[in-house]
Length: 268
Ligand code: SF4
View 1 (cartoon, rainbow, N blue to C red):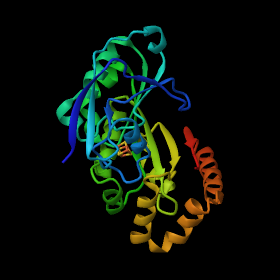
View 2: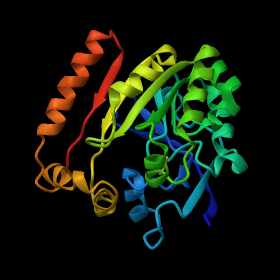
View 3: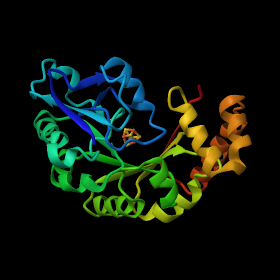
View 4: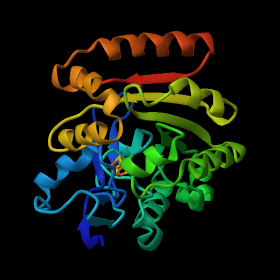
């Protein structure tokens, strides 16, 4: 059962260092999708949710829609979202993302919406009017793996169907292959199956930090014991070789197939 609280916020925009973007918009604090690898769980330490489990709480950030410094946001590149999914399961009832989009449409900004949900199709009209771009994340076609690591996200086939529909409606589509699980995510397979309706690919590696690092390594130990040593090399011994080779392989592949792409690999 997800604990939901509605909170008022005066400012929905936060500055970001994410390449190519000035601000991020997070309609929620927390995310009911509860992915085991979610880097956003750090937010618990800053929002009075220290004693709750990631995925078990969501604060709905109600925004009054007033932009006090209009000059700073109009025409800027905005990303929605980085530490929640704007279409996580709570959005269906609360429609907070939809309300924010309606206000952003009046203000005018260059928006990219990132999600793992086909609920984004509900807002296709607004997104089209805003000339927004939509980024869908997928890291495997193995639905068993996806259910185990992302318990409440939309099934992969539905995500791909949604992306296809968005593309058909003339919306710029991005497929984020994220997070790339070493030796599990097959980026070539994903690109080959989706090229007809994807305008751009993003590649993001699985970067494990505390407190979720041990959960993910335990998951690998239990379900992919043959990969345990390889994950130990990457995440405990911090050997970066795997990522160096993969980056090289991705660049070579994308150039060969003339793909528009962005790689965001981080190690910690
Ligand atoms: S959908 Fe995104 S924000 Fe939500 S738990 Fe999963 S990775 Fe985190």
